[in-house]
Length: 423
Length: 139
Image 1 (cartoon, rainbow over the protein chains, first blue to last red):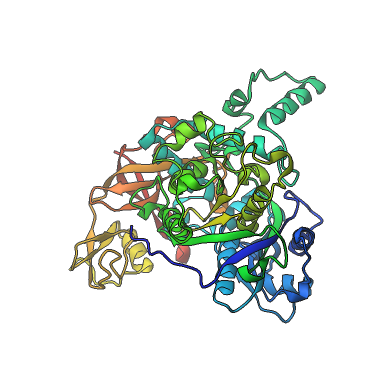
Image 2 (cartoon, rainbow over the protein chains, first blue to last red):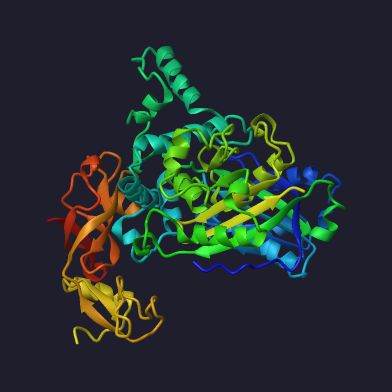
């Protein structure tokens, strides 16, 4: 694969970040969620930001039409932030909507057009039933040749999982280990939708059975719990309930500024030193169905721009919409060789206290996956980790100065990768 | 000339209705495209011809779906009655997504990547909405 070493016209930094609580909120609309995230962002800018100084908004939103009957979300949000008449643009690229909004914001600043840009994303999903969400997210598959075959979003990743199992000998247990790890991290993240370990979910079920005088389940550990089809039913085999990210309401945003003005906002900006984006065919057309070319391309472009290698990166937020996606993802960004993710998860290398911590936020699996908000929420986690503000989930014994986010859309036809530096 | 139709989704579906699984072949580089494409993605030429496939292939990837699309739920599928969707690699090389019929979707562990399959066609809807869908079944 030929990668051209591209460079930004000028440097770009993150000087503020905000994330709403992720979960299911019947009394909150997209507007409320975004304002919650934006309020946190304002507090996070060490030397303050006057919202009037923000010059443009790039907003990720995927299925607003399905969930709230609302397209054209960006100017509506801009109106609630007092940004009118500044330009506001919705970015719709499935689950990488705000990952691409981030990239568009970077490009806009690097071009010299703007100095201060707000990027973010929002998704309000719980207005729909599980079937309704399956239908809405299914619109990001190939509507002519994947959905007529019955494929759903979990189904496509499940198909990827069967080829990965066949080629590399992965077992269902390896997928389960990803879920256990990410819940262990998410239990330490107060913003997470599932702010609880799988072990505690299991213990809660046992306690409930005792309380109700029902037969007491005999699970000895979380692996046995996950292997019990009653506790963890298949959604699309081999992907089970606990392999799938949940249906989530949430919003996230970042304040991007030109490098030359960054220090007027904070003494510790997080610089974006690499950005890459790629595309790929639908799954059936890919030469190798155990890897996502869009992600490999995006990662290699980002590495080339940043002038760093995968081994230099200390932590990453990786798009684990399904557990198989984390295994494929950490290979696509070059952290592990093809098939090598199996050993990585077996040996705990990707755990929070491992050599290469992945998804300290809890990942999409535990933190939640409000699709349009996920990309900038990943970057917000890096912002906290790099500034030593991640609280109980702060990575131990590492001063984080180089990190990466990997944000995939659909079944992998689109991906954005970003590399961050704290100087 | 096997078919003079344009290389469109409509033509592909009409041909499925005639019981033919057809791909487009680039006259310049010979690359096969299934579903058909009007421009060759290999050499980016636009001089294509229809070619009929033998309908034999193997299972390249699959899943059994318990939480299905609304259309599938209407057909009676669900958590207790999953259905199988797969990606089939044709003997001629290209792959396509399809329903996999005549397999036990309740026991996915028994399905194997690589198992030989043969094309099948099945109809859905009535009157003007009638449409032939692509499926495969074990040999």
